[in-house]
Length: 185
Image (cartoon, rainbow, N blue to C red; front, side, top):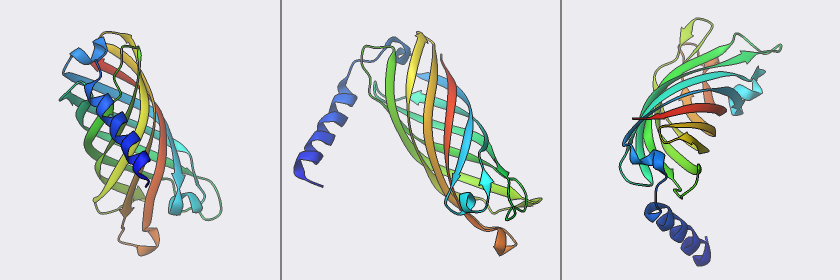
């Protein structure tokens, strides 16, 4: 990466950390619930698995004007349509990480987040082992009031699901496009 790009990225990150927060960020704790669509990629996308549903809940704690720690739970499902399908695949998991808000005096606050996950998949009545993985995402907090925001976002998840039957093993890689409701308290 060129020095210019490194300097630009460092300046943008420093600006995000020192920016003034919007009214909704004055509250340290918040709760976010989300519903969305799962879009499989990689192994599971190649096996005739198609879009499904996702739901999640996160508890967030603001450590600064621009950074929050989060932890939560989620469940997801992929539909299976095609000759290579065995059954619909679904899963559940835990996640934790850091959310960076590019705060400014506006009602629309862009953010990025990243963290670790610990997930388990299921197919045909068989559960995989619990496995670590990762998540990254980006979105916008659309403040409707000092305590409530709508949160459209795109997230990407990945982990390795290993089952008792090796033919069911898969690199679980998928996008989630969701809409959340974020309550500050």
